[in-house]
Amino acid sequence: MSSKKRRKAENQIIASAKKYRKWFIIGPAFKLTEAVFELLIPTLMVYVIDRGVTGGDRAYVLKMMPVMIGIAVLGYLSALVCQYVASLSSQGFGTELRNRLFGHMLRLSQKNADKLGASTMVNRVTNDVNVLQQAVAMLIRLAIRAPFICIGSLIMAAALNLKLTLVILCALPFLIAAVILVMKLSVPLFGKVQARLDKIAVISRENMSGARIIRAFSRSNAEKERFSGESGEYYKAVVRVNRISALLNPVTTLIMNVAVIAVLWFGGMMIEAGGMTGGKIIAFINYISYMVTALLVLANLVTLFTKAAASAKRVDQVFEIPEGEDSETAADGPAPEIKTDGGSSEGACGTSASPVPAFELINATLRYGDDEKVPPALEGVNLAVLPGEVLGIAGMTGSGKTSLTGLLTGLYRCTGGEVRINGRDIREWDKDELSRTVRIASQQSTLFSGTVADNIRAGDPSISGERIREVLRIAQAEGFVDEKGGPDARVERGGVNFSGGQRQRLCVARALACRPEILILDDSFSALDNATALAMFNAIRDSGVKTMVIVSQRVGSVRHADKILVLDDGKPAGIGTHDELVKTSGIYAEIFRLSGEGGDGQ
Image (cartoon, rainbow, N blue to C red; front, side, top):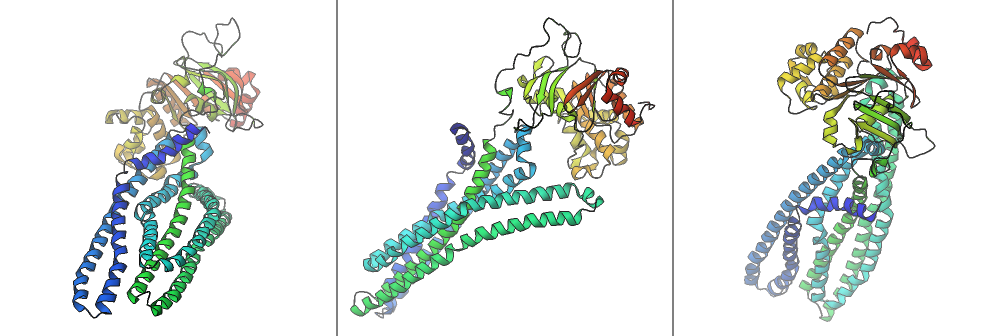
C-alpha cells in the first residue's frame, strides 16, 4: 500500500470530523472554563477557613458563600454546554463516517468485498464506528480537561507550598510508567478482541440465514457448540485485555494515596513548625484529590483510545481497499490487444464479425484468489452472441456458469482476456450505463423488505405503475401478486412471505423493469414448473429483450436457446444447438441423460 493511498484512507476519518471542527474548539473551551472554576474553589477555601473559620470572621464566610456558589453554577453551566456539544459532534461524526464507510463498501469490487466478508463489513460499519464515535465524545469532554486539571492542580498546589509539591512530582514517573506499560500490552489485544467479534458475527449470520437447514439436518447442538467455542475464545480475549486495563485504576490510586500520606506526614510537621496553615493543608489535599481523579480519568481514556486506535486501524483497512475494479487485474491499464486466429473474419464462436456482437468473451479467464496453485474459475472462454440471440449456459455444479455471468455484469473483472459489450471493452463502460444495459436475475432470488412495487423499482426507480404491471405479467407474477394485494403488497425481510418460485419471478420482473438490452437469467427457472417456465420464456422473448442468457443445470431450460455453451471445470466443453450437443458433447449428453427431460416440452 503506497503512502498516498494510506493518507487517503486515513483522511476519511479526519474528513468525517472536519464538518464539526468548530465544536472541537467550542466544547473543550467550555470544559476548560469549568475546570478553571473548579480549580479556584480550594484556593478560596483557604481564605474561608483561615480567615473566616479559624479567625472567627463570620461576615467574611457569608460574603464568600455567594461567590463560591456563583462559581459552582457557572462551572455547571459550562459543563452542560460542553456535554451538548460533545453529543452533537460525536453523533454527527459517527453518522458521517458510517455513511462514508458504507458508501465505500458499496463501491468495492465484488472480489474485494468477498475477501472482507459480509460479517466483517457489518462489524466495522457498526461496532468499530461506534467505538470511534465514543472516542470523539470523550476527546471533547475529557481529553483536554483531565490533563489541564492535573497540571492546574500541580501549579495551584505549588503556589500553596513548593516543598510539598515535590512529593507529588516524585510520584509522576511511576504513574507515567504504569500508563505506558498498560498501553503497550493492551493495544495488540484490542485488535484480537475485534477479530474474535468478527468470527462470532460470521457464525451468527450463517445460523440466522441457514436456520431451516440447521433444523432440517438436526445440527442445532453442533452449531451451539461451535458458537459457544468461539464465544468462549472471545470471552477469554476480553477478560485478558480487561485484566490488563483494570490494573491502571488500582495502580494509579495506590501511587497517589502513598503521595497523599506523605503530604499529610510532612504537612503535619510544617503546621507544627508554623510553616503551613490548616486551610492550606485542606486545599492541598483537595488539589491532590483532583489530580488523582483526573489521572484515573486519563487511565480510562488511555483504555478507550487504545481500543479506538484498533478500531480506526480496522476502518482504515476498508478505506485502503481501492474502489471499483480489482487492482490486481488488467483493468488498471488499457485494454489488451487480443489476437485470434489470423486472417479469419469469423468471431469467437464462428459468427460473422458484422453485425457487432451483443457481447463477446475473448480468451476470458477469471481467478478469485491470488494463489496461482488454485485453478481459475474460468479459463480460455471464447464466445460471441449476436443481438436477438438466446444463449444457454449449461454445466455441472461448480463448472463456472455463475462466474461467467459475473464477468458479463461487471461484477468481476477478467484476470486474463477481455469482455466486450456491444463492441466496447467492459472496462470502458460507465457502471450505471452497464447496469441499464445488462441486467441479471440471480439465482439467490434476493428481495428487500418493503412492497412489491418497491422491489420492482429497485430495477428502475422512475418506472410507472403501468410498467410494473407489465413486467409482472411478463414474469408470470401478476396472479399471485394480486392475490396478496397487488403491487403494494408487503414483502417481508428476505421475501419470506413468498415461495421460492414466486421470489424468482419477482426477481425476473425487477430485472426487466429498465428494458435491458441483455437479460441474464441465472438459474431463474429452477423453482418453476415446466409450464410456467416456458410461458415466462416466451413472454420475455416477445417483450423486446434483444439478447437473453439462460443459465441452468436443467437441459429443459436451455434446449430452445439459439446456441448453448457447455462448461466443464471452468473451461468450454462445447458450443452449439441442443441437437448438435447431444451428438457431439459427451458432458452435455450426460447432463441430458441424467436430467430425464428428453421428452419434456419446454
